[in-house]
Length: 316
Ligand code: BDR
Ligand code: CA
Image 1: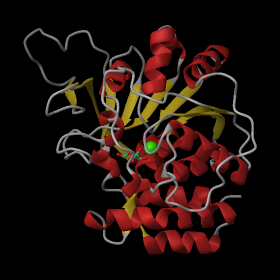
Image 2 (image 1 turned 90 degrees about the vertical axis):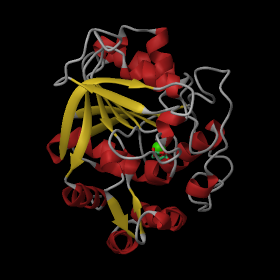
Image 3 (image 1 turned 180 degrees about the vertical axis):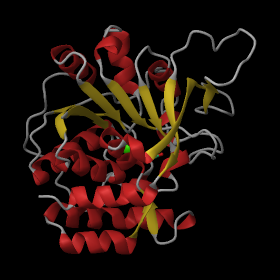
């Protein structure tokens, strides 16, 4: 059984990944931590509570960071054209959800849960890496106690999606991402190299919804405007970014990977660019020496990933 804390900014594709984590029989979802990103922290936290309530998810929700780790960074506008004004594709969501939050801030929830389950917790982080970076700053020893970290973020051999060189989750807090990627723990990076070629068509989703329960039908509803947004890049469908990271937890064999030190460019025209120095390459001694070797996905069996998502979402 994989014990997972899901760090998320719901978010249309975040919602699908959440249902996958909730329904997969080999995953024990032990916590949901929220972060700003696809909408404000108030909105992403409200959305997490909404999905918890609607889908009867037992895991507690802890509210996380509302701004970047470096407070001098300018706030970027919320991506309402992607995830709607309310972060869930503008499907109707009540303003207030009558469920309690975990009393701890997300970074503290992460620290205490990892310490209570040494060597067992996988962090699946599919938003800005701010909560993870705050947890590392507060308690660096957790790096040794976490089983592994799987992130959706970055791009290595394909262009970015919010700038010519950067992907949204990294670009939204580059300093936090650099802290997470250079910490002495195992990070698996599931970036645009694999998520941008893993797309779900409108009809695939509709067929799933027809066979599925209320939750799958809701996913179909909240994904419609997301699919409309993607028409510049996908033919009547959407990229399923965050679900690819969730799938990696149970099916790493569906991914091709390379290993090496990973850094994030912080500032300038390449702000948020992720760079790997592959272990197989030799360079003169320099800044890359001594950094931990991380795992970066460069290939994916998309059809099998989509089937696994569909089969898991349709389990009740
Ligand atoms: C990432 O950015 C967000 O819009 C999605 O939820 C995903 O985590 C893709 O770049
Ligand atoms: Ca996300």
